Image 1 (cartoon, rainbow, N blue to C red):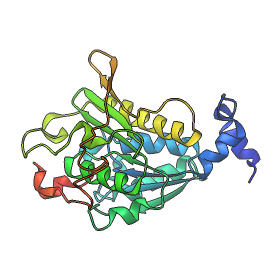
Image 2 (tube, rainbow, N blue to C red):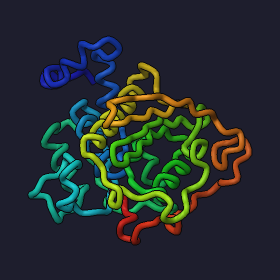
Image 3 (tube, rainbow, N blue to C red):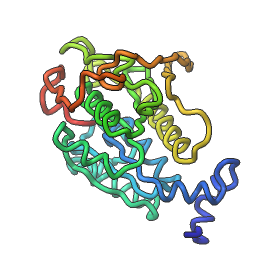
Length: 273
């Protein structure tokens, strides 16, 4: 379907770009992206993807907006405190761009529902802030061959890597097993600079748009590390682990595992943020 006149105007700064044009914008409008977590990472990521015109954006979160979220979770406002984050996110994204269909998944992901949730999307964005969810999402995407953009943030640091199942390394190639309880402090315990969440969330959006357009070089096999205090980026090569538990030729993990026992927070704080 050709672009409407108002769409040509809205997306004009993208359409004039090399490697985008009208056909590229049509690809963006047809794309379906699932964002797991509408918090520090998912908020800026979803905002920029909606602005770019991604046709369908799914939002997964089981939490409600809290006052301490607002320092970094830019799709929510003070008036949204107490309402589900998915509802708040949908309200803000559709206000920004009515072209976007926003699908709400107000639930906690686990091994019984994640495959159904991710099945209808082209690419998955992991904006969660806990290890049980990260490993669950990685394993589900590998088993279902769904591209995944992972990012993590802590204090003044962030990291991002794109996972293309069967083509490059997965999260377990880098970190084979979740850390033991208490080994790694959470953002709740260690803090996070809001701008760091913004930088990494926008980088996730950038990876998604490159994937949709088939342009540029994705961060597959490369971990991009950002430090806010030094204002530096560095890239570390991540080789595919031939003995990876989930993505090797002879995986030991062939079904999904719930890793809640590894979470060092109270159960309610293990929800996706």
